[in-house]
Image 1 (tube, rainbow, N blue to C red):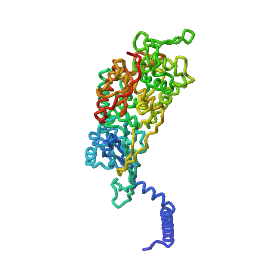
Image 2: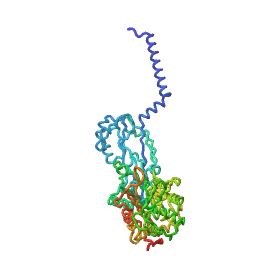
Image 3: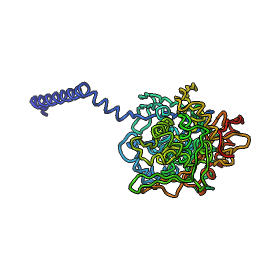
Image 4: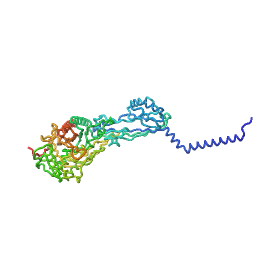
Length: 576
């Protein structure tokens, strides 16, 4: 039997040698030259990165009660590469998650190593899903924002967060950088079934929790403000309303309520109009509550003597040529009366106020409107605050001095108007309002914020004189604010009944904003309360808004334990 020829054996040996060399070269190339690319690809297949959300800081009231906090929850995610039957898995998870199967299936199909299936899931529901042992489904610790007081916990001040936990409105948005903390991540090595390899790669960058913020809101007082406001809006069949309670010395906002409002725990059900904060964002023409600026300017500049007598008719007119005539009326017809400045404010005479402003002059009138904060933000550090509308002096016409002194032709926010009265209550010194007084670290360390900036607007003597006039508004039988009186206390305040401008076209409608803004006790003010109602059935501020001031004022006295105080110096009067 003949064996293979030497030639054939040689050829086979050469082929084998060439093949061996080729394999060796290829292996060498893969292991040396292309090693990093394949290592990277292998790591991508075996290692996944999972985000670790930071725990969001809480929002607390002034006594560190929870107004907004984060509760433990679970996020459910999918590694789509390891889900063999996306539709079947979607059907199984659909009912406990409350998500339609087709919607779930879209999140489960694909080649992504990480995609969220559901966020902020209650732990009980997550445990039910985990018990299904569906390949490719994982769970992460996360938090769910919760507002313990719901719609009675200053929702328009607190705001709300999105699905990723980021602030979208209110203090949640304004203090996002403080509250949010810093997220972390976990890198982990997994086997072909998607399970973590015990001895594999695991690198954890822990999240850093956010800081808490301590607000100036007093939770019990806020609750009473919202409840009282809601009752008044309902009884007056008003479109809405706003109530602000403020410490005039510190600028701290103790309560800020607007109706209608929303439940921040169910923000998806809220109407767009409910989500804004009218107290700092909505504009209105203030009407007669603006007369406090006219009076303060006249006293400060000594444009009018306190005992100076004015012959006041029930209307006043000015001719501006070409048949253009503007007439302003008092709230009711009356025979000519002799009035002093205190009487004009007490009875809220439009005609008398215009006469006083005439002696003050345009330049001073414009100057004091600006000094009291009109036409610019209050600085309260709240998102989308409106600065109001104050015409520049060069835009004033001859008719301007017939309307601005009585609160027409200028627009303000409720907070701006409350701040005017806080300035008078604080001896003529304006204090920038604030909603946050401190931050608190995760370890419990509290950092007090700097005190609010202040600036003098009028002298203490002027503030005391105007306070006496405002006290007469409430205590005198001729005053327009008698419904705001609180037994045993001297209340200083002013009514406002302002026609609303027509929405389309010039001039004014027959719809009204009714207001009462004041402070107590008059001789040592502890709290400023502003009440503004939008289109109440009783259009006058003295009838619609003053009773709410009285009701809430009594509750504030009890809550804050405000002492009665003494009698302020009342102004001279021409009335006998």
